[in-house]
Image (cartoon, rainbow, N blue to C red; front, side):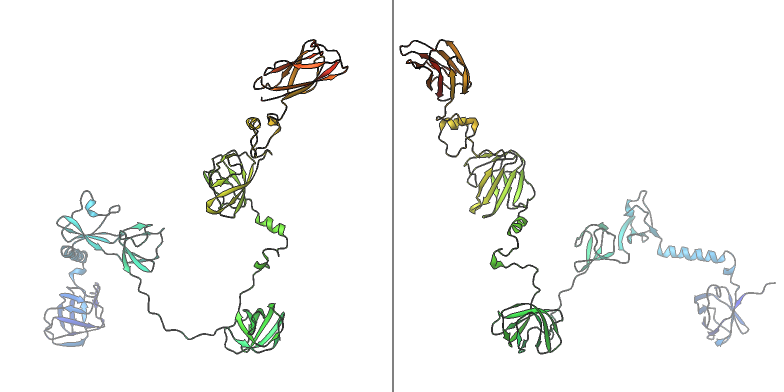
Length: 542
């Protein structure tokens, strides 16, 4: 037969007729002591009716006299120790707690408000439902879930990051303030009252602290007698200055500051040693003042020389000449913003204005045909619009009041800027138009047709004579390649006589496209005798 299980660690104290048992050195867990177990002290036994904690028991009034630090035994005979009995007690405890405290529900995933759930989640008034990820809590009141607040610990996220997804109760910093997230957000920077509340504001600037002690400075003087020149120069100087080894220091004569020498220095407290690599003036001085100076630049030009000291003026000029990026044609083009002093203008849009600051110059090559409009703000050398061609060059210079002048224009085909047309030649009034061979003959001073014609009608040499027809003895008709405008023109014809017998040449009434002449004797009889040919010339308007 198995002996009864018991527990007797420690001692007990019980007042006479008392109902509380106090243990010392005991561990009255549910394993070692339960209501229904039997407590024995000496020969007196009693039933344990309850347990308040792991060191106090409740019993019926104790009739075994007062006990202090007495040995004891708990006999483990409680009905709760039998199978099912303890489990039933736990169920009873849970039901009691549910009856008094209600059941906490959890909001299903995918919902943000329990009132949106279909079918509705019902509960008794006072019961709650929790959204775990946000900590939001609702409490049932009168058949409706009422928000009861957010119960979630703060999560510090550091400085605001627009790529971070923030949730309720996240804490972040921005511009010296701390913010708490009250609505989920990504990419909305604080302050933004829709998503953030101020958690802690940046404090005011504190009061200015007391002025610190004056530190070591620069300056100083020396009476060491030294001659100006390159090399190492050691000066006696007082201690306590702020010079660091490697600083560049200039020593200047107090009497005449144009006498100086400078270089990298070392300072050992009472001696300033300068490795002089630059100096000015000459002589020996003993009235030196010291100052920190900047490192000389790498250049070797002087502004007073106006670039006359460059090694190669041509190379310097070439380095300053830049072919910049293309400029698209437009009503107004900005040559001031061009990236070089030579640019190509592309496109065919008419240009009415050019932006170029006073005194600035740009050279332009046109990539196609467009119109430059002559006007008060864009002055062209022809005082008229210019139609460009691909390859043409122009030089523009800026003047005051936004005026830009074209000071040079060169056509790619080599012709002049203004070329005389036929009408210009006929009018013979232009003083600027250049004449090309194709129109020079239209000028009033030019012969429009000429020829040397034999007595047989053969043409030895000619201009603008297409043919000569001999219509009879001493009768000839000269036909023009390009006719005259009218029959009103002047003709001159002289005979080439091989044997003189008084022959003459007479002109018949001319027509626009031809002119006839006759060779006759001095009595008017047509003849070919003794005539070697005729020199023919016609002048007028074509």
